[in-house]
Image: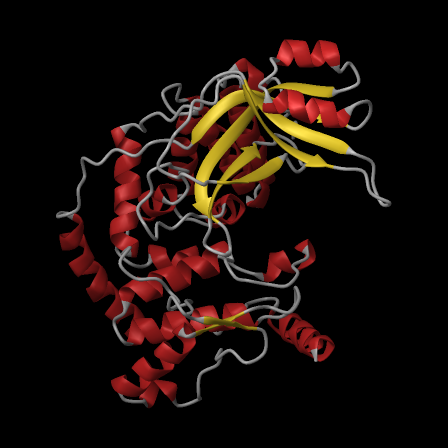
Length: 416
């Protein structure tokens, strides 16, 4: 069954590679009538925004400049015990000269939940190249208790097996993690995105099933002529069953996404519409596997948002920031996909000016500054004009020089 499903996806993609979804006379994937309905909803949202708390301040993700240790020879079990006893980094290096040590690494700490809804803490290396950084998860047994982490270790220890040697890889924290307030201009962008997206509702129901083959993804041919209660029922069915792609060429999750956007627009469910459209833009769908060759055909459809009376720059930058005190159901954008969308925006120059200023902003935390660099580079990658690409490249090279030295020294911008 999986093989047949993937072949169907390939045929669909090859047919629709020029344009994923049907476009109407207005050049959009939503017709004039639907856009008119959406426009009226946006007008009311502007009134709602005035009642949102514009003074709220958001804080950066907790972060620290730390070290990474790898050891796969010698007395690894004793190294584990020494880490449990909080041996200093200097003494560890002296005691275990065979260890690989990487210093001045930006490490991000996040309190979250795993797939089983268990409280965990994640420690994540911010990699500045194409390699995957070290990522460790630990149980958060007492989520309300915040212990000092200066001089401590977090590790992954694996004993010797018939398949692999004994090894340990670890983070060492020379200082406590810090979280700093974002400037109010950035916090306002986050407030705007939260207010516009509406945090009171999720796209799928809490008890929605994940379906690989049985999810409702298509609409009947006469769906637009159906009464509103029938459209509401169709939307409810789609919200109850999330389509999971079987392979890279399985198009069903994105088909479901656009159809949910259409139904929610027709039935005035803006909160579901915008999340559905942002999921299409960010390609936020579950798939069993996803190869990069399939990405180019998945469009962002930023134009549809720009045709509405929305402050798109504030919306997209509001979901770009990584923050520690996000509201429940806050929407995070994908840096790569946001960069691609920005490259297609009519406000591209405004976007890039703002992003460059974020890279240079010494009051902004290191993590968000580096993410701004990645955002800029992703936008420039998809920019079609070679002349503009070269011009942008020179700008970002100068911006990177303003980053802290431990970051700027490791970022190598390719000269165009």
